[in-house]
Image: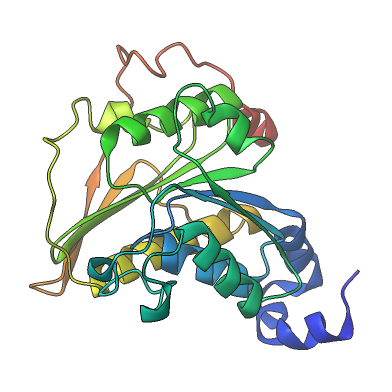
Amino acid sequence: MFSERELERYKRQVMLFGEEGQERLKKAHIFVAGAGGLGSPISIYLAVAGVGTITIVDMDVVDQTNLNRQILHFDRDVGRKKTASAEEKLRELNPDITINAIDVKIEESNAAKLVGNADGIVDAMDNYPTRYLLNDVAITKEIPLFHGGIRGFYGQATTIIPGITPCLKCIFPRAPPKEVFPVVGVTPGIIGTIQANEVIKYLLGSGELLTNRLFIWDGMETHAEELCVERNPSCKACSGMTTTKQARKKK
């Protein structure tokens, strides 16, 4: 059931997908890995859309160099834990949802437990070892992974449904070299909102997901294109998958 405040808050959305759709969002739990450049717009738009539970995990503190793109954090937050800063802003944006902000490093020993019973994982990370770990958790739990990556004026995004689409290892078999990469704030804004849009569509069960496609954004040319991607039958991460929760739902 929705309060009068919630019905008024979501009025324009309910015009699109009805109270039943809004109820789906309210009952959903999404795990966001990272409270930085991508995690900021992702968590903001999921929060204001009314996703009922958002778990956001990060272990860093806010640095002055973050402020050109990490819009969850303000100048006054420099030196604070990103999770504390993120939780404060998200609760202010929507007091009717649950925010679980966890200050910890995502590692093999805790990743599955951190994700818990979430309905999906959003990859808002800046390193591939952690991304591959989240990919493994998504495969094990048979829940979608919403991937996004950025560098400079360029970005990419795709939606991974384990057992149906290529996994992250299929698309990127080898991690790129580790680097401190340049970035302008609009790039994570664009890619992050695409990821949030994918999450909302998935939860509603509507629209065409960004599956089997890698979206490529070129901000310098204001141009977007898509690359078709396929499962690797020899993929060490997902080649053994034959049946998934999503596949069973479609039968």
